[in-house]
Length: 136
Image (cartoon, rainbow, N blue to C red; front, top):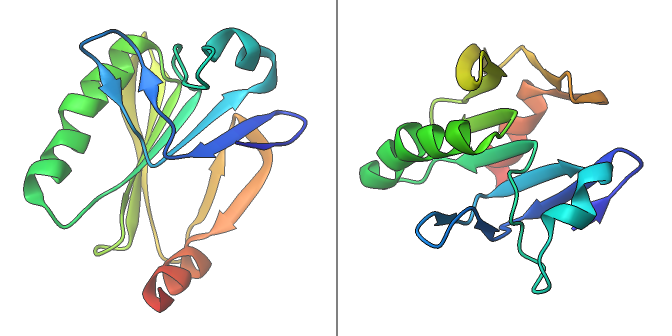
């Protein structure tokens, strides 16, 4: 995990919601004040991260899973924000908690700036993000 004053970021963390609902999102961020209670002795998150990011794979079944199953799971478990990154279409769908569920708030494309109310000092150019994706 990578830490700063506000929280910690982890790539590929195990998130254990229940015995039947275990996921490995591409990236998760959790507020610092929630971190100690959210980690088990093995270092897995046992509470919902504040922010989860999933990057769509080429497999259509996995894409459908990220848009349907994981969206419902993350919504039910209390994730506050969920980003679905579609690197082929060069867009990010931003879902935020509203009335106890995750709701699509906006879709960002090249030319937009990625921000989050949970991360007040964070902003990132979508042009820069997708230029980096194209180079890898």
